[in-house]
Length: 275
Image (cartoon, rainbow, N blue to C red; front, side):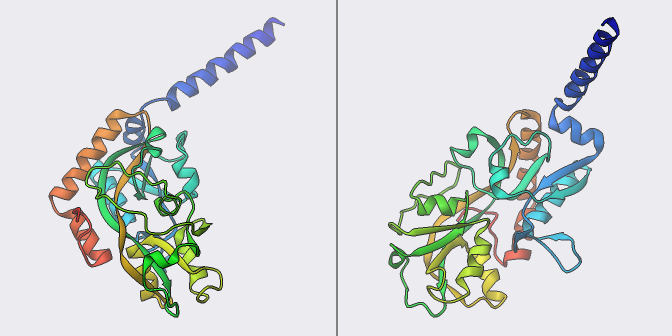
């Protein structure tokens, strides 16, 4: 019995020691291992995608690499599902998310948003054969978008953007039949099948629509942007030092023109500045 108690106590000591190591600040852990794990999407061009060389590429990927460079650490990428990322409580599975996330009041209960790094217009698109020309005409229609996104919240009329620089907006689509997909890119795959075949329209970011059209998707954007998204780098709640470091780095990247250069590289326009 004494032997069992000793073994148990030893096991508990090892467990608590391991927990203590893992419970250290995220920034300290990154600097100690000289590596940062960044979560993003593998199928969200031109923000983030796997290129022909089987490497991560895109605007968000370049921003993440620049952050790692300025921290003087190596970078690794992981591609969990969006709803897993937005759920928070990452438990060390990754350190940082650079994946075009809009700060909202609900998300701020689980995540921290150290800095907005660019702003994009949210747009509405239909099949090129569609007779719909006004956004309001999608009311009551089948509209596709990504699950757990601001686009879905917009269609649900439950979107609240509380970040600095976000213009006001109006809901233009009433009582739509919302079709939610893992990402809005997948919604565009269904929209391309034909007018009304699976979808009558879709909501996504304007750059995603433009990239799809460039790649031959038979779709068109209608109307003006429905809202503008301030998009932020994201971390789990609990490390103020890491939060402040990221804010410092992203601010410097904006001030020295790096974010504008990367935006022009991938989008052809400067989304680093609020419109």
